[in-house]
Length: 342
Image 1 (cartoon, one colour):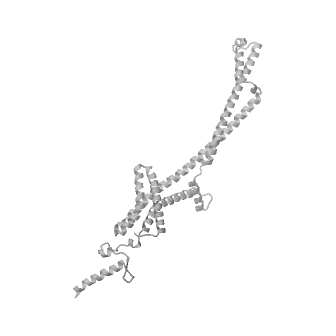
Image 2 (tube, one colour):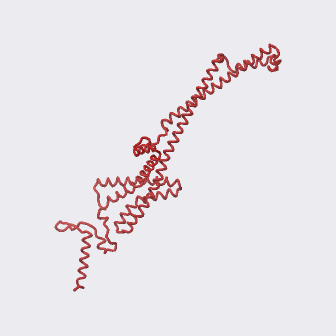
Image 3 (cartoon, rainbow, N blue to C red):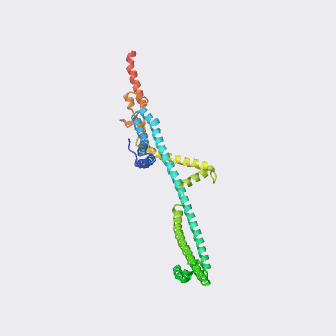
C-alpha cells in the first residue's frame, strides 16, 4: 500500500461508497428473489452476492502473495461462478418486477374501465327513470296534490261502507249504485298504485344519483393516480419503435426488447459492486505490488525481489528489478562453477 493524493483519496472513498450501496441493494434484490422460493434460498443468494463483490479484490491479494495457481482459480473458476450466480438472481428479480409493473398497470386499466362502465350504466338508468317519472306525472297531474297515505285512508273508509259489504267486496256487483261505488274504489286503487310507482321511481333516482356521485369520485381519482400507466411499457414501446423504426412494433419485437432491457439492468446490478470495490482496492496498490515471480520454485532472493529505488551516496538511484536479480543469480552460479572447470 502507498499513500494517495488527497483528490485520489476522495475518488477511492467514492468508489467504496458506490460498492457498499450497490452491494447492499444487490444483496437485497438477491434475497427478495430467493425468498420467493424459501428463506434459505434468500440467505444463500445474499452470500453469493457478497462473495461475488469480494472475489476479485481477494484474488489481487492472493496474486500479490505469489500464489499464482490459487489466483488463477479465483480468476477463471470462482469469480465467473459467483458473478453469474448473482446475475441470474438479479435477472429473475428484474423480470419479476417488470412483469409485476405491467400486470399492475393492466389491472388498473381494467378497473378504471369497469368503473367508467358502471358510471355510464348508472347515468343511463338515471335518465331512464327520470323519463318514466316525468311521463307518469304528466299522465296524472293530480299526483303532486295528494299523498299515498291519504289515498289509503280514503280506501279504508270506502271499504267500511255497506255497499262494499253488500257487493261482497265488489266481487258481485248487481245494481248501478254498487257499480258506481266499485268503479270509484278501483280508481282509488289505481291512484294508490300510481303513487307507489312514483315513490319507487323517486327512490331509484336518488339511489342512482348517489351511485353516480361515488363512481364519479372513484373515476376521477383513478384517472389521476391509477390510470394504468406503466413506465416499463412506455420504455419497452419506445425502444421497440427505435429498434424496428416503426410506430407500431409487432409483439415479437416488444418481447425481445423487453427481455434485452431486463438483461441489461440485471447485468449492471451485478457488475457495479464488484467493479467499484475492485477499483477502490487497486487504487491503494503500487504497480510493483502485482509483480510475481515467473517460477513459483525460484530461489527466495528472486521471489522476494521487487522494483524499488534506493538512494546512492552521490544522490543517484540504483533501480533493482527482477531482471537484475536474475543476472546476479546467474553470475553467482557461474562463479561457483569455475573452480570445478579448473
